[in-house]
Length: 248
Length: 275
Image 1 (cartoon, helix red, strand yellow):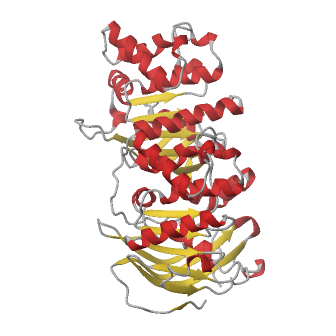
Image 2 (cartoon, rainbow over the protein chains, first blue to last red):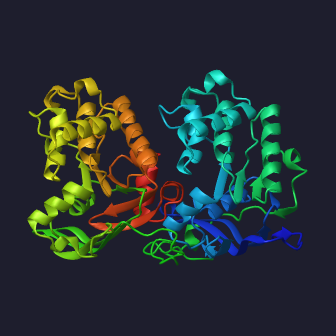
Image 3 (cartoon, chains in turn brown, red):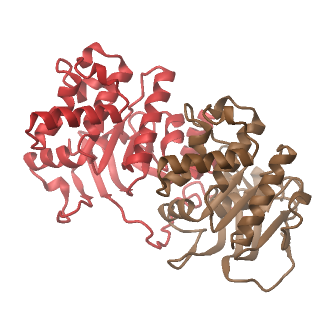
């Protein structure tokens, strides 16, 4: 796979990806599905990289691999923490879990709504886990819900009953309430209304200015045109192996 | 073209480097247990980190409940070691403890909620009495303190306090589980073991009990090991997941990775059967 990256001197490094590849072994079909191969790029503090490519080119798969929801086949993703450099491609699960709590965020359009938990509690949770008192975390959560255009009467309601758009706003407020060091953005603006999109882009600009590194896929890249430092073009996925090609 | 190796799928057997951002609270190594000709645990390693929920899944007979019983020191393996990182305690293999030492260790540091409340509760004692009994075993003697701590623990488990003197046999299944939970957390255990805690409950009651567990984990940072055959429960609760089959761990990983990108053929079957 060819990856086109316009090179530019990076500020303090946050992530250096080398030869990263991902394939899915589908045992029941005895097939291997190639997602992407030999990806390499660098991401520095306060930088914003836009991933481009057709549907199926592996953009979201790359983000999920960096977040370790997917396990890479080969390659490295060296992430600079306060404690040292860690390879996200092979780090122990518990270290990844710690990094997710402390400094790597994944922002998606989908909310994993838990039953019987109010919207404001869902948004406040990252602050509470970080040690903020309940009352303060709730008031901060309400501020963010308001910023994303969620009506106050919905704040104490359960998001499992919300429309897709409202769920997405709750999800974004939760994902962005606590500043992270690196954000992986998987189509966060999809199906958002204009005011929520504006609130999201403003928050991303604020985070970028504070040094947060970001890499993302956007359905409408024009939403974040003012933030983009570099673009990475992923080419279309290779065809899955035929069963005959696969060793028994 | 890369060959597909079904015996050694990607990511399952690798030994990743550690930056040591967290130290384990529970460590088991090479635990073997056979019952007659049946090998229930065939050299199992398990590690649990502070504040996390480790989910253990697998079909009946996979060894997941046997492993939990080992963690609760209810049984002794044929081989293997078990350490809990407890403040002020020497680092020793807990499987070598005698019966009394095990009882004391359980009373102070390990909580358990069984699927069957009859295993965890005295059905003819009051609910508060069940919680107090655990405090008594741990050496608490002041009656007022016992009652107050039982009340606090029942309240934290979202048990209706006005019913604290009701006997478990007079309560619903969901309420019985809350009493078990209150008993298990009364002394803030180092690890809380949950053996199919919501199996057999109505779906709505199950959601309430899981929500209580989530709250406890968030507010009190209680470390939990949750055994369940219900992947929905594991997905809702667990940070990391261990998949067992025939007494062995076939795969373990972050919960989202296990559900979104399972590596082992058995795990793929399990996840796809659910989805």
